[in-house]
Length: 221
Image (tube, rainbow, N blue to C red):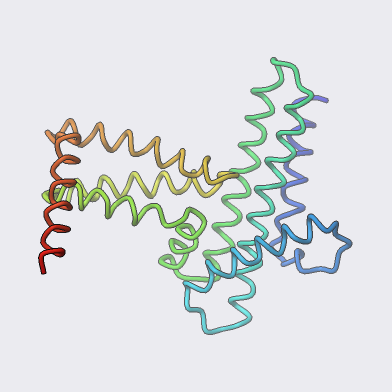
């Protein structure tokens, strides 16, 4: 199979899963495993959309379908990629990975465009946070706790990098892959902070000491 034919096959399989018209709700003959999988991702999508506080039930349903279809599109892409890799020789492997990534990038763009047509930019960010376990805010909060004297400029740099990491992480096929993207960008952030004179190891020791003192103070009350 040529690289072009493999790319077309991969893209078609992904886009068949991601229907902007809500085709995922159509009646289908599903295996028990697939039915259970769709039930799980539907539940995940509902939890994400619940955070948006949408009052229009039809709008909420459309967004739930989009999120669930995105999960399924990513799953189908990764399954197709892995199936191709299992029978590919070494010369073909990088081409297959590249084709898979191009298909995911297209899926990502279409998903963000579809969500953006339904909800506000702030709510789009909430959806992305839901897809990535809220790591942006959790990590930003951890840096603030670790380094309470961070300047506004430094905080903007940290947040910008975490948001960039989120764009890649939301396409990850597993929790490990999603967290891996944030880990990569945390390395960049830590290098930036070190260049700005922060001793992160010392800051960790000082934070642990502050927590010990706070715990001791609470026990003494």
